[in-house]
Length: 121
Image 1: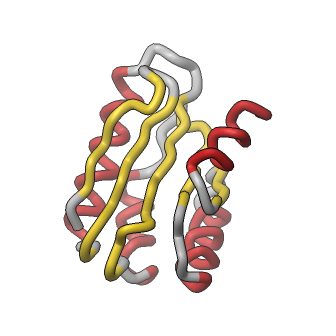
Image 2: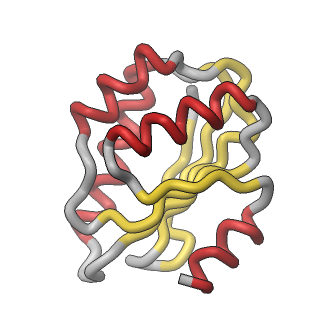
């Protein structure tokens, strides 16, 4: 699963984009990169938007949950937003995982919808 991670808004919102076939090791690596971004930010809360619309094959929920548990929630992690997810099964699994780990998580069809939520909050 190739991915990119960068600031959408410097030190406030991380934007990650995933595409291709998602592997557990690359998922872990991406989450650790996002965690490093949060570590370097001086802000009290850092939000993240993940664009998953170009993923061809997702990492299974069974493989993803232990990775999310291992990486853990950052103490200054704000909203975790997913955009362009087309699979209802993946959306439900992500929502379940977010609930288990007590993450502030929402899924949206577009980047504009995700940004609107952050502006509202």
